[in-house]
Length: 300
Ligand SMILES: Nc1ncnc2c1ncn2[C@@H]1O[C@H](COP(=O)(O)OP(=O)(O)OP(=O)(O)O)[C@@H](O)[C@H]1O
Image (cartoon, rainbow, N blue to C red; front, side):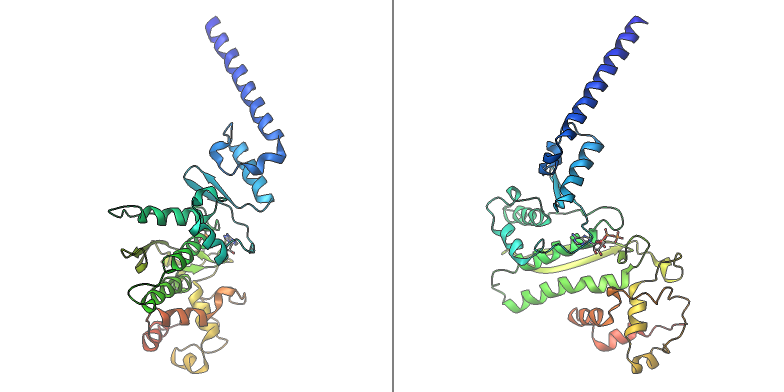
């Protein structure tokens, strides 16, 4: 019994001294935002980690390393210069990009260098994960923009035209995927309702040579059923709002008709722009008549 008592006294002492350490760490409020790598936080507790991230968020620092992972916080507003071509370049030409501020470009550049440094190139993967609205779509767009710019920055021996076309196609895949696979939900106006696996292939000069996207787990039930205050996939709103009079006739879409499958259509979102999707489809090689076939599915 005595032994148990001693154990519990030691336990109490330990937890008190641990709490004291947490308090001491948090008391230095001014310094919390300086922790640019969460592995340097000591002691590591949910509170200390969250307080550091919160302190960084307050001073507009949205990226923090966590060892070899990167934690990205969603600023929910455009932050000027955070994604500029100049900054992209800065990370690309840096001697040690990991010594610059934590950023998605540092991860992108490091991954690119990992491919370059191999005698027998080894595939590299970046996993972007988080809850709905966390910024995964945004982050993958940033990565694609980075590679489209960096992997094409030198004139290709194949001729610049091919490279430009691939870059453009890589970027144009986003509006098309988002039109057909994203919808407005309670948590995110532009929520992807599918998972995707994007592959970017580089040639031996480390220029983009091709790309492929595989999608999985598309939430197909959304076409027939949408939760209250949510919407169907963007493409349906784009078509009904953006079709010309001639197309309406051909696609059997009378103006002002009330469609069961088009809830909350009075809300106008940036994502409702049909023109953007059509332009992107053209650049991807989907011609007018194929587009027409896609859009003229029978609506009731
Ligand atoms: N780094 C950022 N800078 C500015 N705005 C951002 C950033 N990241 C995300 N956002 C904003 O937050 C919104 C939600 O982000 P995003 O669509 O990328 O989330 P998600 O994780 O892909 O969500 P879902 O799983 O629902 O698709 C974006 O539409 C954008 O307005």
